Image 1 (tube, helix red, strand yellow):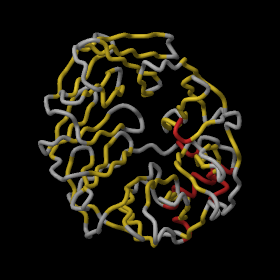
Image 2 (tube, helix red, strand yellow):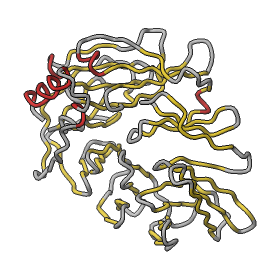
Image 3 (cartoon, one colour):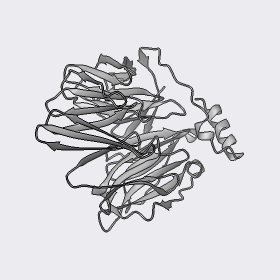
Image 4 (tube, helix red, strand yellow):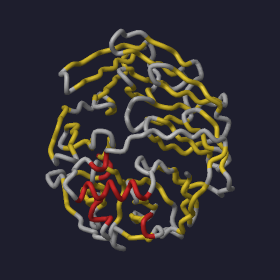
Length: 357
């Protein structure tokens, strides 16, 4: 998206359009084999590693290993604005529709709390922090995951598993927790499982439809992955092939490549990506699409349902299964991210962020 389009989007918001952050949804197509770097930004984090980077509209936000959060403004030659004081330590960041949400550690114990910053304020160089989910009293070890698509947070508290809305600032669902069960939260559903004699029982609870589906797998190997992609349960057990089970028909497909060495879920929960030891990757959706993935490890981001994988050595970027080169040679890459509004890709290495068109 051009600067003029972003500026028009901001103007609409100032005139009262509360949906201005979501009006630009055009997919981008990378037809060239070579991706072009359009800017390199020196970072605030010269002596720390970046562990998260993402963007909305003209803003790029980063989180480093020391818990500092910094915002860069593309309208002002990527001028930086630090959002944390030296005594503050942020663990995780997430964009919602119109805000940036931070999970921050307490300075005197291991508890965490939630902070919201308006994107409109950040664009005006205002750092106004608003405490949200104030009723939540948990430590960092009890936090499980963010869900960016639904703007929810999932954690364990008071002997139950709870799902809270970051937008509505309220409890959405609460599930009793059993010490005999292991669990995950995916696509708005709670997945739980338990090993029995030569069997593993798995259940999927959908709190919206008030339904519960139960399955049994003939294996007592440890479950290392449970995920839901388009009404399909993706299960992987140690030493076994990955299984994809249709939750409507209970039909099972086997991806006979062993255990994935890396697994990533798209933000929209419509697909996921597995990287395997045989030099291939697979995009898992209603269909399975295999692609070449010969490097040892990849960083992951996604944009409009397209997976973006960057090899750890910076040799190539794989977008939706298609391999692209880049017109520069980054050193050891720390993290990648993207911006759904400008449709840029960010590659972070020590001391700099590269903006890829």
